[in-house]
Length: 197
Image (cartoon, rainbow, N blue to C red; front, side, top):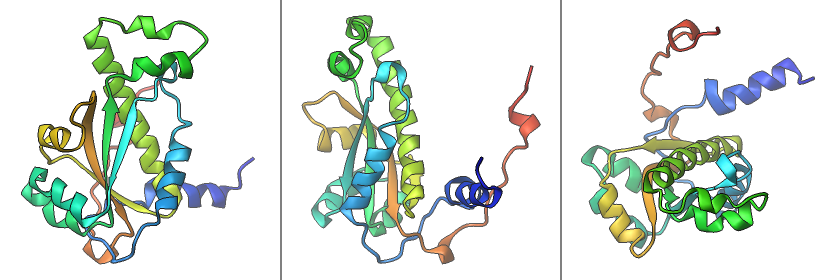
């Protein structure tokens, strides 16, 4: 049985006290932490273990300069200031890896020629894995700022040309500057979003 105070501490770090950050301290993020977060997140469930998430970490000034033209104006400064920006993407060629990742049956055949199912599976499960990744980052003491507000086609052409990898959303990663947080927004109550029948 988990101690109540430990459970509250963990819940606070991952959910109830964690915030979406827009400002960043000038403190670098070690590559080892990014690797650890990926290692943790990869164990979360996906359908047929399809694992379509692909992550490109933008850290260097040159890489930030390549990303800059695709950013919406409102996301420009906070992204350039973040120690790391992750492009969270999904691979439409995920089924090619199913003989290795899901050897229990011929899962690859489920997707051949079915473009709609390929997209739906890659997008849904890639997004799910990106959420696992966000939680993994928070568990390692990092702050995050997930966001839309960028030109996906431009990002794909710049970073994923010649592949079937498609960008989903961006996530700034680092150590958040608490002084730049907005007041926390309200959330729905249980009965407004859930029902038990």
